[in-house]
Length: 114
Image (cartoon, rainbow, N blue to C red; front, top):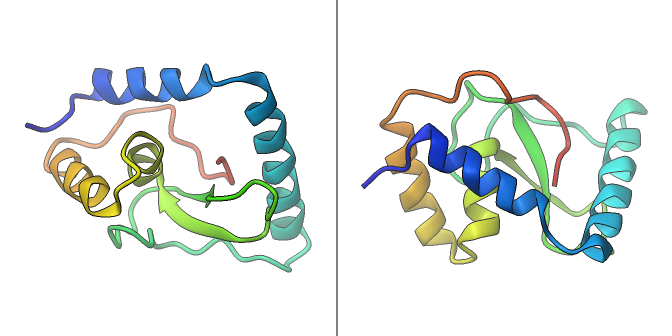
């Protein structure tokens, strides 16, 4: 069963309510990635590394916020799936189900969110 857009938004909101220490590390990692993209030392590709989609904004995902330049480039849907389902194969399955539905409207931004 595919997730609805409301369920996806709810998952995103839950991710935003993580503990403050993790958020501080997250924000620092995002800042480092943003600066690296701005100065050209890191390139934001146009393809998701998990599902291969090219028609959605791509974001930087960090497995370890202490290594801010070690990122996996993911579309927003795969990024949410990574945070909610650590098992990659489960994440890809969820994403494929989501992609059979219409894409999210609004709220997606091309950035280096983690």
